[in-house]
Image (cartoon, rainbow, N blue to C red):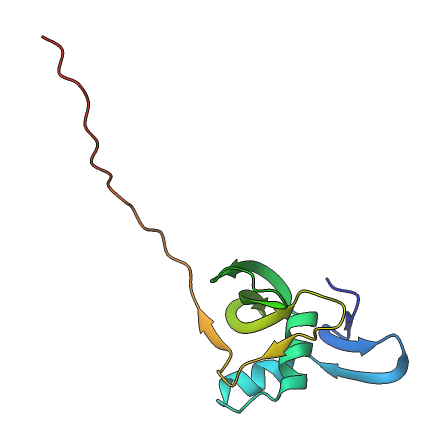
Length: 121
């Protein structure tokens, strides 16, 4: 569990160590997703910081100042994708795209590779 998330009365709460009066439930994110509401940039940033990161993929070569990242986060035993640009220097901030955070599921895929070998005579 991340530092900004704690349990209270069987609910996962987001807290801020700089502001002891700040707290709200992770159910807020679930509500936004289930109602197809739009996440603003702050919501996306907090979602990424507070939900459990399950997997992360880079889909392009790192650029000089940032890289495109697809993160798969776990929330309430469901998995979601968020796509964003990660700043690579102390001067570059992370930025989030207009796209939605959407639910995904894993699946297994079998790949058949055809190879050739020498025939012994």
